[in-house]
Every structure is written in structure tokens, then in C-alpha cells.
Length: 199
Figure (cartoon, rainbow, N blue to C red):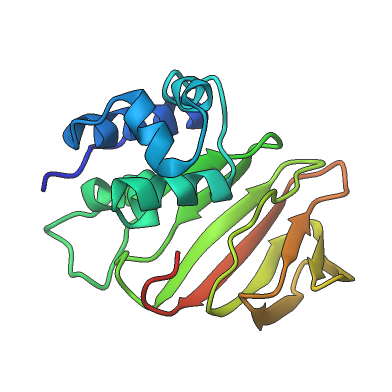
């Protein structure tokens, strides 16, 4: 199978995901209606995503991933971004996959050199007022380190305010949300240990 190439990094995040989804759907010979039925989503939503008019939540991306039979990281264009001339344990700064998700436009940049590893990490940039919506839960653990700014992390109903230099860790199956209640951008180094078949 040939993986779809990501849209150029200069394009808007919604257009990047839309172009990636359209290419992945076309590779599988699916119509929008067929993909909608498989994913349990409306055809209108899929059409909006493909045209770059909607930033899907991670849960929507997860449903699309499952319906397309792909690894969720393929929405980052990870396979196309990886440089075959580099060792498989390296990802250069200019080769990061990047997506913008949700209404508040969180930016997620894939740092992991391999998408099939049980340990995955990324940078999450939260704009002022940014909130992670409809987060993925599964088996494994998540953790992170606040590189800049301030965030609020809520895990299983308990909220904590975190500042630059603070770190955290929790089990992935617990409901959780990351938010930036401030007027300044916040950046978090995010780590996930993932059991096979999840995410």
C-alpha cells in the first residue's frame, strides 16, 4: 500500500488533514457515503473535513482511522515525512508530522521517529483558550512536561494547574482534558505508552 503524502507544511492544518483524508479514502476506493457509514459519521462532516472547512477532534480522527484500517499517525503524514536516509531512530525537526485539531486549533507535532512504537511523543501547542476536546482513551499511560506557559490538566475529575517545568503522568483509560486558560500560548511535551491495538 502506498501512503498518502501530506499536504505542504505551509497549508492550514484543516486543509492538511482534509487532503490527507481525501487521499486515504481515494486509495481505498471509498465514496464519502461509504466512509461515513463505516466510520459512523455524517457524510456532511466528512465532506467538510476533506474541504478543509472543519478541524476534526481526535475522536473523529480515531473513527476515521478505524474505518480506513490505518494507524492514527498516518493523519500526520508520518510515513511520507520520515526520511529514508536517516536512521530509523531519528526524526529531524523539519520532518515532523503536524496536525491542527478541534475548534480551538490545538497543534500536535509528531516527534516519534516510528509510528509503530509502543512509546510515542509529540509537542502540543495550545493557543490562548485552547482545550483538548474529545480526547482518546485506551490502555497504556500518558505523561508530559510543560515547556512553556501554563495549563490546566483534569484527570478523572481532578484538576491541577501546571506551569513551565511541571510534569505529569496518568493511566490512559482515565478521562482527561488539557486546557490553556491564559492569554498566552502554552507548549507541552506529551508522551504516550500505547498497547497494541490502541490509538
